[in-house]
Amino acid sequence: MREKTYSFTIEEIPIIVTKKRMKNMYLRISKEDGSVRISAPHQMSDERIYRFAKERIDWIRVYREKYLRAKEGRREVRQLSEAELKQVLQKFLGKQMQLPPMYSAIKVNGQKLYQLARKGVEVERQARPIEIYKLELLSAALPAEQIELAELDKYKFTVAVECSKGTYIRVLGEDIAAALGTCGTMSFLLRTQVGSYLLENAHTLQEIAANPVAYCAELLTAVEHLPKLVLNARQAARITNGVRTTIAGTLAGQYVLLGPQQEFLGIGKCQDEKVQAEKIFAHYQMSAEE
Image 1 (cartoon, rainbow, N blue to C red):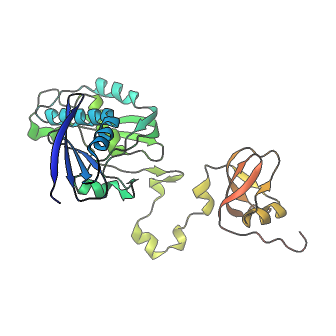
Image 2: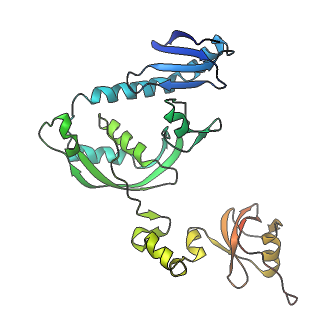
Image 3: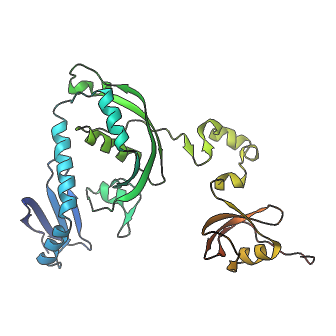
């Protein structure tokens, strides 16, 4: 069956539809010209395709305008001041929603986004909650004079970010550039801390390969952020063997589970004063005396 192409308009935004032999429907917004394209199976009705686009028109408008602005931004270099940059950075502190990039491992309809992106397909993604705890300007090269496009590498700044899990730093950089009325990209990323693990305490792969045992961290260092719950022998035996156990006075939440001798047993969660295992590293065996 041959491909069929037609177009329609929603709120003055032209949308081009191509029907062909395929299983799923995809929506793509061209970064080059902002054109909106939908690829759909032959058997899908035109009414359903129109409804699909209509339900996503707000998302389409935002990203179409973003790409069109980015294209226009490549024509000239906007001058920025350090004071303006610091003011914009302050706006990104705290809780917010962030849209994951197409080049990410998040799955949509069973496919990883980066696999679709490599095919030139752009699909709708759901914004995710993130939090930026710290956003500090470390250095900035912002020429006061007008520069040429070929000298864009002279325009750069470095920030230190402390953020929640799931934050995409390259998206944060693009959003900061957009808030400054221009476009930008990340050229360098250095992760300095993950939980309680610091870069200054890291070792090279060669050092670890030469003496693995010497560089092993204690298990508890991975869960230092969680409160500890010390169990008696009976509780430890029940919980580590999958039995949900009532422990009066225990607040709801996630805990590090410790045995009677403070030995690390695993991680558990409590709800309504009932504790159950989430991840067990050691099953506690009660002795005859216990």
